Length: 118
Image: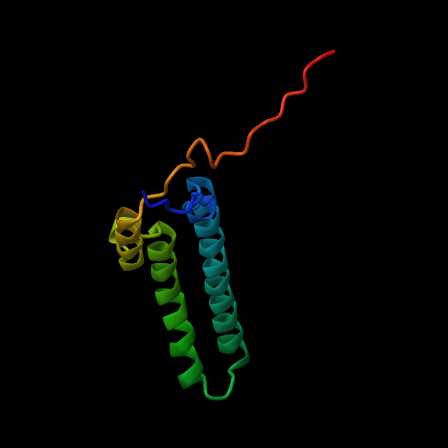
């Protein structure tokens, strides 16, 4: 009988918890809204000081004020793809199905030595 080596199941393959995903999405949203606030402030300063090349900077700042919030909402509502939809997950599942993890046989398990009491 052919013995297969014992392969432990790693917990590092586990997906991130829902709380961790939510926290990272919230941080990304706040950071992008910070960029939007910076665009609003930069636009106000540019208009107030009548900066050179205002015709170039003002549309760029306005674009940042419009596009950044839209992207922030999209990215805040996004979640990682499910494992079944990942190409890597599919190949990993196939490999696991071909060679399932084997438990140790009785002979291979470490034996616990129990000291007899005197």
